[in-house]
Image 1 (tube, rainbow over the protein chains, first blue to last red):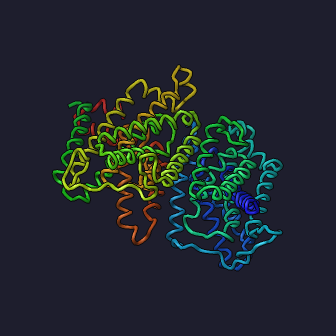
Image 2 (cartoon, rainbow over the protein chains, first blue to last red):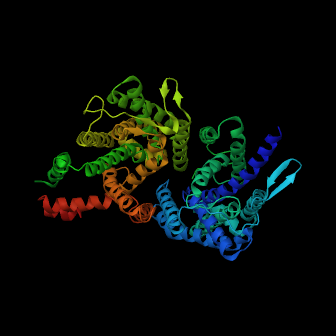
Image 3 (cartoon, helix red, strand yellow):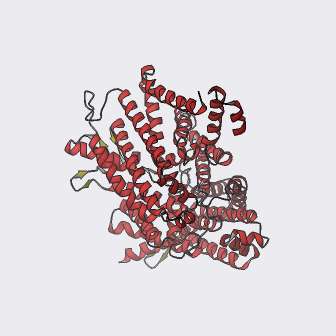
Length: 295
Length: 340
């Protein structure tokens, strides 16, 4: 029974970090209605930027955010401006612009393999890493410190984003565009600017998850791929475009992953995750917290 | 000769040339490359029946390739049933699975459909990797299935020492798939499918049961795609989950179709003609010095085509071909100028 609590705790901590990983994806989907297949690569990029920022400056791992956030924001901003926007404009009369998926996949291939050429296939561990292997003990429960801080940063990011989208002028404009592009344009909101800003924010959030992951996760060029598929599962589970949905979807996946191996072999746990994904798609395609949009 | 007849003449010449290739090319390496090219053109053509005409983006067609490969191989290994029969058994099972996936998913909007087909492949791969046996059938989990090679060519066993028979089989399969696509595209079903892909609500209002049509297209597409699975198994004599049940293969089919031009008959073939050499050659010559460079090239090609020819390369190349026909086909000059 004791192990059960320990596993639940681990599942929730890791799950909230999964939620953070999926947060950027869900935000981008909510506004642009585009599945960003390059999201995993964005996380890989965030991890590499964080890794190099710490390795070159010797900063505390979490202070790498000062460098990661603006870098990633502008990366996403110009990714939207240069690659996605022309396609949106060319396909403005198409209902489901699936070509955008192909472009994001192209970006995924380019980023992952550029990283492979530049940095090699080696697994890198963060150094200097003051958080390495640090544990907190509460009675019999053991908590990994970097995961705990990661969880707290994830919750803070989700809270901040929710506040930002509700209370600020820019946030309200983003929500207006995500609800109805034409109406928002008529109200004087430039949808292109909003798209670029939303992509920038989503990419910056992917950068935050990179910073959170590096203290306890190895950095290598294809590190984003498992996170990519996982974030798809999470956002569909929680509802595409929903912030609480992403966090709770993440925690559900985290719990399945930490509790699954107790009752079955670890490889079957993966099948459970995909099974759950399909089940939710069939039973409630809008997800647990999703709103049934018709775009 | 009228331009129309000249066009048909060109196509017939191309088909004849394709049949004559093994008379000239004897190198197994080059023949193998051509076989793979036709195989990808075939799989993309069958993908196109759903991905092109029904206006959705299936990213999980390797499920059907996997079903085709596994069913015929298991029937051959365990009961000695000829892969030719196994091929159609696999096709029928794949069509059944296609309908099963299609019924709930084809009602979904584009992004959800793409994601659920992806999840389906990944789920199937995980399941096959975890199963050593299903009832009497040995799946061998991640280790896959080996087909013991036989000593002499055997048509019944679908095994040949030389590459030529494989070349002709895949060529005939491709021609058949193109013919079926052509018939579907010119049928009422094809028109309604394309209308349903573009404007589902409008097509629905005209009385077309869009979802039912899409499911029918899915059944046909998955049946034909599964046949390629048997071909792959008999060509390589070794299958394992990561070779026939992977997202990579599914993605590649979608890429070929989109680069060539989805929803057109020539698109998948053009896409395979253009993209296969890019991936093959760059993989052969660059992977030693710079691993991953061939995927960067693929990514750049994808982005450039989508930015400048979002409807695929079939459009500009088709225009080029038309101009060629007009110049050399002896067509009416005045008519050509009016067309242009």
